[in-house]
Length: 322
Ligand code: 173
Image (cartoon, rainbow, N blue to C red; front, side):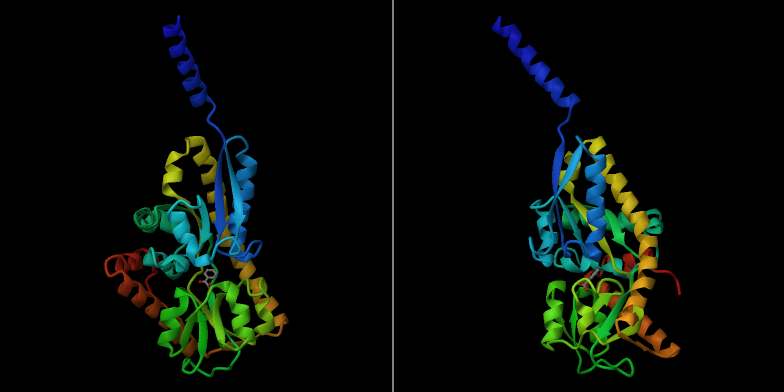
């Protein structure tokens, strides 16, 4: 008797396991403050997944920098401490210097997914981050230099600026002294006069109240801010096709809408800054061109210095011929 029942019991369990795969819950974290501009992409992604993924896949949002310092998010994702992360390449250059090259893209993600640029980066994400980049949820969003002291030209000598790796090579090339901080420390640094200005994209300076401590924005903007949703590769590989499809769909939607939404938001925030009394420092066209070109020269030189092998290839994929 026993010899017959046991195999049957095992067979039934094995079958039910395969037919009704259990709902999986993934843990997500953001390197940016909850409910601010640069967490919006993942927060929307989570809403969509939790809606479409009932009984299939759910996401538990741990939150932003209160839960984990922003510069540690990349490591946590790599090591599987979290399953999903919202971050920008500049915040995990310690693991993958090439990730900061997203800022230098002059092509759309749709183009990069076709021209091999995305695939090339995907290999590096797998090797160095143990990750898959599911979606770039910030695009068409230039960076700017914000100041509390006037400048007349391209010489930033004597100015101390808050940076991340995004701006380091460029601002130093113009003579500035730089100090790296997480976004959460910018307000206090401005308030105490520890810095004379900071780098940040065109959107989001109102999120943490920096508008109160900002006199000038320098135009033109440069580069293209990148924030992306990453998933740990081992976690991804363990998901079934249905679970992957739910995540993919929400990710694709996020990447597609980011490109157009940010264009509109850039314009709105530019007006909002002017209305808040932030003055624009505008160079004449020749100087402006020089400033803009120096940004890319310094940015690519930095990439190539940090990765002599991959830097030049990324430049091929990401740049538009002049
Ligand atoms: O300035 C920053 O903290 C930074 O590097 C960044 C990158 C992408 C979006 C917003 C900020």
